[in-house]
Length: 67
Image 1 (cartoon, rainbow, N blue to C red):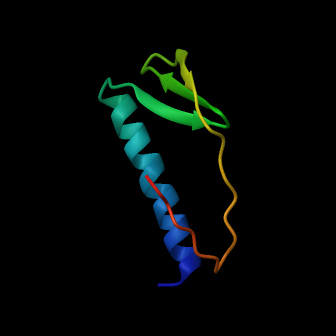
Image 2 (image 1 turned 120 degrees about the horizontal axis):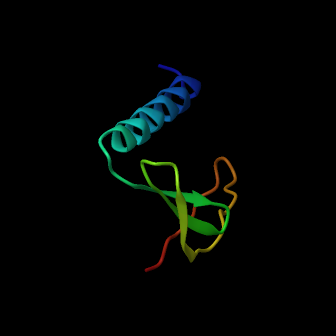
């Protein structure tokens, strides 16, 4: 399995889980830029909070996450 296949498979799995949660009547959270949004099964959306925006990562570079 190539790296490109993994990315595509992960995208499909994410979409399937999202759709399954909505179909089961559950709300889901989405990060949209610097905002966390709750999406309800009826399609309504509610901003939950502002979050740090996405960070770009460089291929091959190592990062240390300090908590």
